[in-house]
Image (tube, rainbow, N blue to C red; front, side):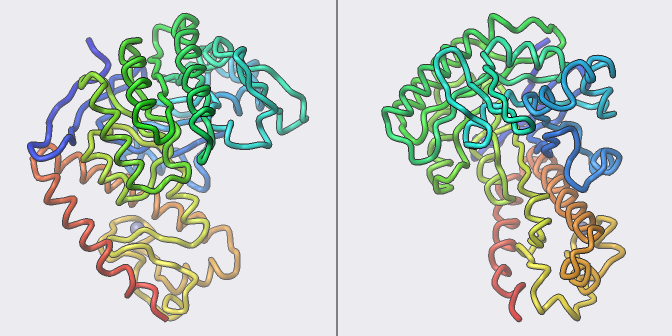
Length: 376
Ligand SMILES: [Zn+2]
């Protein structure tokens, strides 16, 4: 049985709903994975994530490999058992860490020379090693090691990174031995259409279980990200699940779903919450603004989460302003619930063949009221 099945397709766009089948269960697409880099989503518990209907997380293989280390995780019976998460889980290979000078010493054809942030030692992670680590962790979906060129890199740098990424993907495929684990490739190519075409064709031919468009959402304008996604998709088999790494905001997700993206991951909802930026159906509310100080309304009158049912903007404003950690927790809870609910609504709208209408209405409400929300 293929790991991905398309259930419904939009008549007016490339949007689709489907099922990704993994060792730890089925995940309905499109879905957004909360980011549990070290095995935990910041300020939101696993039981709460499950309550929100979240069936898949993403953790970081390289970080878990460094701490607590493979020995501890193996003793626990794998990463799922170690963190007590019995639903699906992706692991990222660490390629994204290439954007951080703190993590990367240098890169050559052998692999990435990572700097251990805990003891500053330098270690070579080859494509084979990245796969062995993920095989041992036992995640449901492993990601190939890729060479991600930073935003603003020259065409020559992107060509180098792409050639290396394709070669590494072949090495990852040969090294992958875990039959209970799917393997996704990651394309590169920056914002150069010809490189993106080359990447999509090469990866499609390698026949991975799914394909991620990497190197996007790292500083380029959203319009570029949409253009690259829509263009790259043309060269990829329709039956492959498409994953856009590092996205994102409600409006970006809606647009990318309409372009045919099935899987997202982002730390954005919880990071926004920690900065007091709250998703609502009427746009982003800034909880630190004076308008919230004496407002006894909920964060979002259309949200059914525990926080919106029980707490006022005034209370959450007070917790935020006084740096009370419970405030961070409650705001992260709401933002994560809001995104999980958005994904549920998107899937339902797709199944009922009314996605474009849903998208238009959501965008209208989200954008129209944005300016009124935060007036003092
Ligand atoms: Zn809420």
